[in-house]
Length: 457
Ligand SMILES: Cc1cc2nc3c(=O)[nH]c(=O)nc-3n(C[C@H](O)[C@H](O)[C@H](O)COP(=O)(O)OP(=O)(O)OC[C@H]3O[C@@H](n4cnc5c(N)ncnc54)[C@H](O)[C@@H]3O)c2cc1C
Image 1: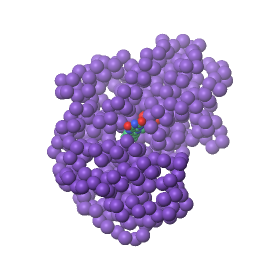
Image 2: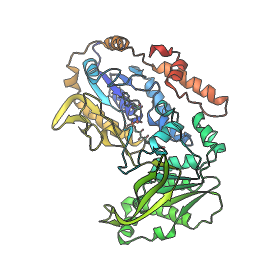
Image 3: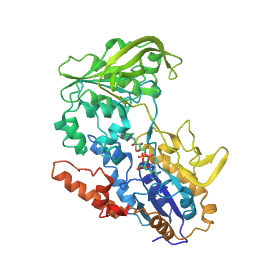
Image 4: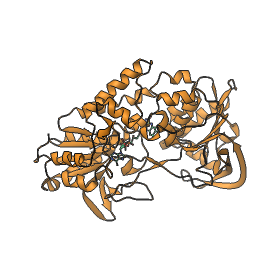
């Protein structure tokens, strides 16, 4: 139990940025950290975002486990800040609050038909196959032969791989069982990855792009005409500071030279801007408008040339980026979808909000891999430590008061030890099926695996 005299920090969110912030705080010396997450489980997108066929990346959770075992750390899963308790409650009990709550909402495409049945966000699909409780009850109609994914980044690549990979290969991963069952009935044969700009601007990381060309029994198809670069793209492709462009182009060239050997195919479609999702009671086609590029190197915009085509399909996934959600009591930038901050200190206009900090995707927007969050969290913690003397002078009530408050609000937090019970139960359930883990995907099942009666939420 923390003492009233300790320097106490609350971290909202238990994804990579939250854990890296905790690690940096502990390295600085005596401090107590309470980490809150709205889910009963920790690790944010490492559990609910990273694709099931990328198990190595998930091993970063071992690092987070070590951080969680450091003296002074406590986990409060199943506590949503802004709903179970408010930001004011945290400000009352802690010297500082670090927001590490990620960017969980999707950007809107802003075209007609976007919300037709059969048009989904990548977040829904990713959350569904990863067993995120928010998306447990979704279902996806995979009964038609053509799927379209809007977006050419790593999340689009994940969605594409899960649709294209033979179910026998997915069976050995920690993919949620309900998803596996539905994917086993999939009739999808052709998957289109649509981008407004060209192959030089596609955002795939090298490894992710390469993987799309090595899925068992699946072609990766690029039209060689799309690889004839204009003058500006040629400049971009030889720029030393952007060598990933030349590498990606080499992979696209390889794809464009391959014979078509399989029934299933991934089609890369460049210079196509989605202009409407068409259909009556559900999606029938994606209407795309041909684009050309205009502008200086690295600032080229896609300009629609008016040539419209309907791409017939049975399902559409929109993977065009994320934004954070506001939490009452914290300034929010609605344009960027982040908590506005200067060096991690949350600001309202020019006024710094004393004791409030941001890390990770809610600080800088939804970009960067897991590792990028480490330096970013360290930078915010450096700002916090520079303010520490001032913050530590503020009297804070004993943290046991917060426990009373949670009880009063009918909220039953999940401790780290209780999460470890869930973890063990999932691994055991997975072993029985030849999988690394079988996730519990409903809140009540997670709570009961933690040994908590679900009426005690
Ligand atoms: C689909 C997808 C796949 C990815 N795959 C990879 C990959 O393979 N490799 C890689 O390096 N990077 C990958 N990334 C990027 C990586 O996941 C991010 O860099 C990282 O997760 C960002 O960390 P974060 O802590 O800012 O946010 P998150 O990981 O999103 O964590 C935010 C946490 O805050 C919690 N939370 C939100 N609101 C509240 C609230 N009000 N109260 C309490 N808790 C709250 C959430 O439940 C969540 O646990 C992927 C990203 C996505 C979207």
